[in-house]
Amino acid sequence: MANVAWVWLLLISVLQLAQSSETARSHWQRPDGDDKNFKEVYSIGDLLQIQWAGWDSSYTKRFKNNETQAKLYVNAWNSDYSSFSKILSSGNDISTHGSYDWKVEIDDQQLSQTKEYAFTFIPEGMSYSTDIYRIYSPGIRIQSKSTNLTATTSKAASSDTNGLSTGAKAGIGAGIGIGGLALLTTLGFFILRWRRRPSSRGVTGVREYSDPGSGQAPTDGFYQKAKPPPQELSIESVSPAELPSTLRR
Image (cartoon, rainbow, N blue to C red; front, side, top):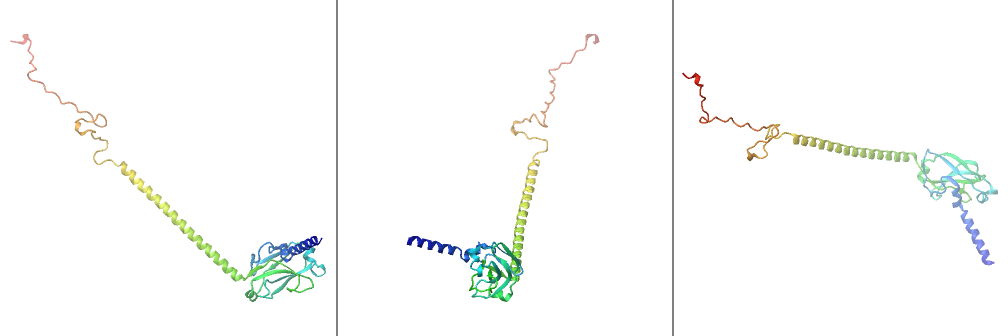
């Protein structure tokens, strides 16, 4: 029996640990309770809609008289750096889903002390204190608007510079490609024209002998075989014709 009782006590302790403030933060929707602290960053002047899903009695029972009405505060994350806290709204029913629109507004002097903040629910009728039970959100980071503008401007300038550099490189590459293509085209044109140019050793339409030593002209083309020279008659082989006898006197 002693062993069974010990197991039950251990189980209850584990359940209580699971329902600690760290578990309660998972009911925050914005800031997102499932994210790590300071993942979300906001600037002065931003409009932030704080949202929560609501908490059941296992969390609210620790409020005074099981109160489900609470005040919403924004406060410094680390009280060692700053004791800053500011009430944003009251009469919030934290047993169900709710939201509150907050225009981020913290003075520069306070930001110089810390840039890490959180939202906290405190039971109605009580003031903010780190010594009482409260339901707090994940930590967020808040920065001045001038810092944000500087960062945005620097980022935009960097993007423009990179864009121009990339464009210039692309233009140079395209120019080189087009110039090279034009050069090759021109060179090919002149080579083709040179190959088609008539030979300087002959006249257009005239062919050379294929065998200069043969003494014969080709039988085709613009050449014809030379006609043989006229043959002379032999004097001895031709006899004068005699006149008829009737013509003799």
